[in-house]
Amino acid sequence: MHTKRIPQRMCIGCRARKEKQELVRVVRSPDEAGIFVDLGGKKPGRGAYLCPSQECLKRAIKSRALERALKVPVSDELIEDLRRQLL
Image (tube, rainbow, N blue to C red; front, side, top):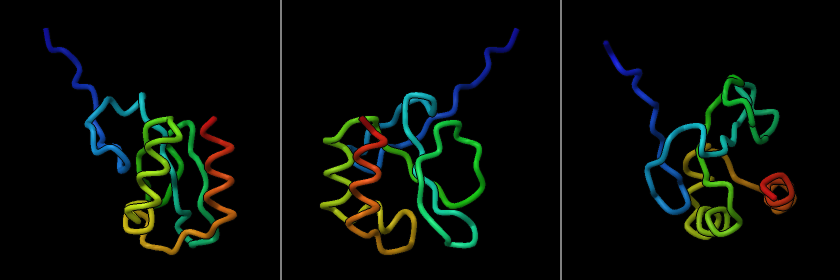
């Protein structure tokens, strides 16, 4: 009997490896129209994973890891929007 492999992802804030469902996916849409939180983890586009904590979001912003992962500049209003959605 095979055990199903649980997908692992790395948080771009704290760099910890965790199960995919424990993390929140932030997605840049394929047409670069916007960046948003993907709670289901299935939306198309370039994604980055974060722990659902304000501390990991702060680290990702300070180190510019979010910008590097999504390959676009991240605006201040988008950061505020992400903070509200991660609460």
